[in-house]
Image (cartoon, rainbow, N blue to C red; front, side, top):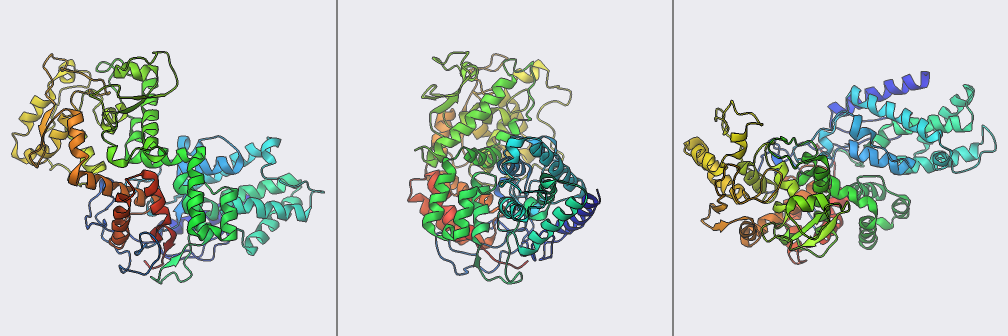
Length: 591
């Protein structure tokens, strides 16, 4: 108990400091100093807005532009603050480290902070309060006890057979072996000394060999080098570019692709130094993508960018959409993941993201979509092509159409805004204060008249107000082009009140269209295609770097955008370009 209370006191003090300062500091766990954290930075194109683009409005600096660097995307990569594992990363890391299959953090921990870049892996946004640390500390105790109650799981940690309760050689093997995996780097000598001292205290208190190891594991799992991804600058105040260490690079790569810790092979490649070469780094990226854990990339990156996570808590009014159920929700989530995977691992170029006639359905989802030849009782997801000429691309997926609607009706304005912000990367300002709601104040979600109303007609009246007209004239046409799909993605020709749906529209440049296929074809060519591709580069780089992009990143972003255009817009090629870039492989100090 004394060890536990002492450790908790030390960690609370350290994590409070980490939460409140962004400068180099001394921390426990064998790390002698942490490189300076950067402040919030402006968008590489100069925008400073919030939302999907990633600017917070707080201008900062990423250092001088044009710093020397080799490889794809040479520029000035800046710094990333020490990065607390978010809930998804923590659960995955614990599972891979201990051989478990649990989701304790995602289900029970306090929600993670989301930074200005729109992702929950932004290092500067992930703080650590006393309450948050208590969760990690208690989890370390609970999960370690669970592992040591199962002999099969214990073998993942106790990898040698001790000759007795004080087998120093076996203990040393375990400390260094498990420590390498837990800290994602070799232990420092003073760390090993502290863990041996903890084991000696456990012996004094009557613990057997496994009891000593158990205390060591608990201490490791509640320490900063485990809970945080730490990258060091030899000169914390210097803006001179330097490469990450091989172990830091291994962590960046594994948490990008798996949202989890490096495996034994990746750590070995770091240990040998081979990971720093282009060939090995490229090979390891390809290997990680082939592993089933690569689903973590789709779930986290695509799940947040494309709004799939929002679908998990999206409410549906049953009187408006009686065909909705939890099975449909889960099928829609799976469909987006499988659809995105067609671009990540398949042959589809990103330029077809809005137009590909591809769906993934099980029986219930196929029935909802009106797709034939898929049995209603089929539980597995199957790929179907050209199932419906009206339903194409990502904007035709039920997940998108549902999460961009109210619980009781479609919202063309929100659908249009989502496309501008999350596909084209354009910042849409918030509406001015005092704008009256579109639906009457007395209208409840269960009101049938509100559910069945002609939304186009109501929006037309709304745009009569000059304070509303400017934004609505821009946003509404895109959303109204999807009006043939209701609030859960079912195709329809008329509203509930019997009035025919008009899916025609005119974009701000005067381009006319009718329906989703025509709309997506327009959005996928010319200047808009370039916008869509360029924003995908920015989103991937933002996620990969775990920070907001700054003005100093602009040369690298531009170079990768230009290179990707020569690669047929393969998303896998883009991911490789980002990983091989100097921006991904380097950092500097400074504040």
